[in-house]
Length: 388
Image (cartoon, rainbow, N blue to C red; front, side, top):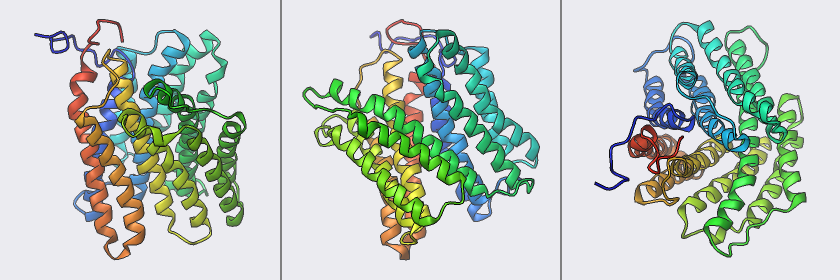
């Protein structure tokens, strides 16, 4: 029996990426079925319902789970300090699961408490190592998690008619924060992975472009908190599209076609550019706002998360950094889900419902395939015998 196939100890609670990538992928695959059940009236929920549930759960459920898995792993690398594992990691995962269950029940207060507590608990989990190591460069992640907790709280208070604030505004701020996280992490890793994985790729980072792209997203967060005229938001979105498009161009995406672990990240980042263009057009009333939202959520968030979930799971379990036909199928299915949800839905309004269904099937299939494929990877000890 080869070393890679030999039985290994159960390791699901050794490091943060393990439970949260698994839970996130299972939830991503099953949530569409729950959404269809609510939409069709087969599943009755007592608290969050319909579009409110769908938007909330894809942002504060799936996306935040993958952010948690990434940060609970990456912060350990950045600081050299031990990260939550064992019982503390179980408790954090249980809190996330409680949030997913409680939003379907009549227990609105409990649901709000669990969901607001999760990003705060995550901040505590990564805050200790960051502070003890003096890793000031990454302190801003703590601030972003507090903003997400505030957006989560505002969402629940609005839904319970305790706050005069649109629920959608809370979701938009949450999406802006996730956009900033993707822009920061993408800027750090995509050019590095490109140059490491493709000899002579020549991906570069230009200081002016980098600062403009990141600062612009922060301005967008502020704009979405204020009553700013739609024309101003549209102009900002178009300028941001130029900045992020220039950023992507400097990373040389056309040289990545033979390296799936790299091209999936470039393609996903391209959806950020598409989102910003569509956001500007939506502010001008030229396209529906949901097309912009799904360019960001299905295309950018879906693509970057599935790409990083494969890469970091392989790297942190001692496996070679590559993508076989199963992983490539996951990448392609997410990309198809985004293209069908955004462009087919936009250009074929007569079959809009069908595009939503087909997109959902592609999305669910991608993450179901990941969950099945990576259950043994995430639940067993590293193949090289190292801790983690």
